[in-house]
Length: 126
Image 1 (cartoon, rainbow, N blue to C red):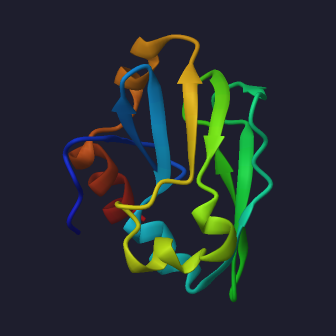
Image 2: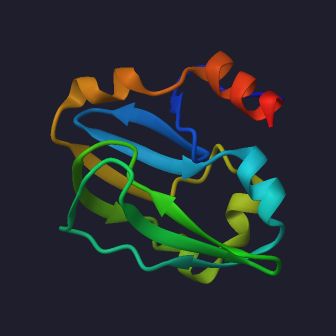
């Protein structure tokens, strides 16, 4: 499993990358592989304040639907509109295609997420 080291990860298979004062969030390659061909990414509302673990939106594939969760407390500030028409971008390159951006209530909260080794260990443990 090849995981970028420039971001953090959640146990619910989101990746999180800090860009300025916001966190860019997507799903891991492992998650998109388990879901299969994505047919829908949506139900994300900008301006909404979420707590860590709250459902931020959803991805649907030919196999299943899966909630996407807020990695930390904060306000959803942007949704990647390109995914509305082309959800398959995530299948093509999960680590290059973000889903939403969140402005964290506490920027240090990202430090409590998993690093690449921690996420790999979680996936390997099943």
